[in-house]
Length: 581
Image 1 (cartoon, rainbow, N blue to C red):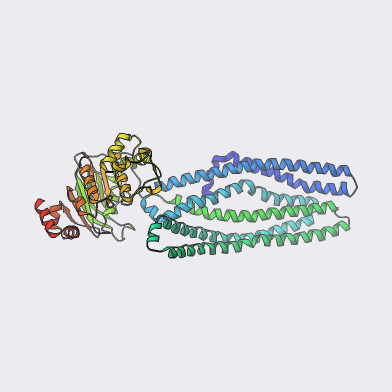
Image 2: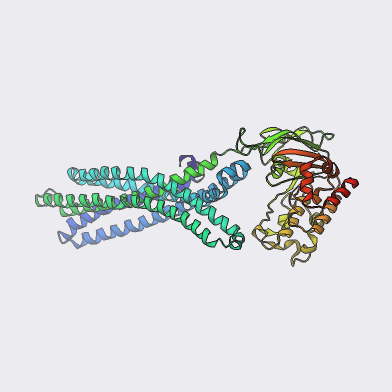
């Protein structure tokens, strides 16, 4: 938690003034037993009604002052805790957005969501309790003990003994529950993961009638969370009873020994009552301390999980300045590129890939499932860094480009189409802020999306639901293509982004893309027809390049490509295409 204490420096006034107000309120509370003792000894015992009324007025005054200072402290605690929570969420979210795909894959989306939401809430609660109670509770315990010493030194030893006993009880319980709360939060990640999978894949679950199976998965995960919560709760539940056993034993000793001393004229009745009140204050403060132990134990576990995210460093970091480029160099070049998702010695997803593509040309990439097509374009976009070899854009290594410049050069339509909630215009202007409505409409026309966007009631101001749920799969793909085209990138990457389009629309799209002069296009597709007219086609097979050339050349020279084409064309059609070559 100490690492996250840096956020408190933004709330120095609140962190100092809040506990100070609570401290003053605690001082008033410590004076109350003395006033009551005086009311008993000098008022009730002697029949002095004026002393009783005077003492009562003092108690009301202390109560009003204490309430006022408590309200100020409460306000300070609320402002500081909410502020820390807001800043922590903001920084955590910003840091997650700096991480590369590798770190996000390792952490897992559900775990990151839980840490931004649930774990930050635990820290936020701890900050509020820090300001409100961390100073007050120990001060009351120590202050009540000191005040008891001023009344009778021998009886005050009971207070000291009870505190030592309670500390010995609290320490091992806290040590055990910290571990359990960490495991409990990790189990919550599992619940978040299953919930997210089922909400996003609800159609698949129902299509395969897997509702009962998914319910069981969720119940198993929830049961695991419940088990950790119960184990932590059982151990934590020992705190309050153990404290009250110690405190009640102290009560008995105070009343027994104090009563004997009253009989021997060593103490007054009011002083015994004051000692009992101080013991009550200590017991209530220690109960608060016990609850604080629970809160800070959870916060400590959550802080450790949050710091794990902050400690993650992005493996892909952009350069500070723009590299020296060569306009005569190929727009894209791969030099002996190999890549492994795990580590340098892990299984290769790509191995020794080399090719180049001139500016304005069209590159087609085809291959079987798992052949490395998406991996190749992910390296080109620098979502991952090559394990070996170099990826060059205009003669400069992609690792030498600043992130902003690299994103400006490349427009990508990922394999899984994502639209964000908002308006159609907001989705279309994600790439750049200077995109005009005319450019958006032109991009929609090229992407073959204008036919259905023109029919929308509010045009470019039409609402887009989260994930683009109010559009079909083909419509979402066309909108994603239009979004990439609207930013006018130098290099356009279409990663199997026409899979939901019919053949006629796909053909119109390819024809329209030819009109984008100067734009280098990379098309990843399972359809040979989609890349048939590309200037260069790369055939991937199990991460290796099986062939590079035009459609006709590959039909003659690459068996893998011909096998793929035979699943989509007849032998006669392929012979005709070879002749057209």
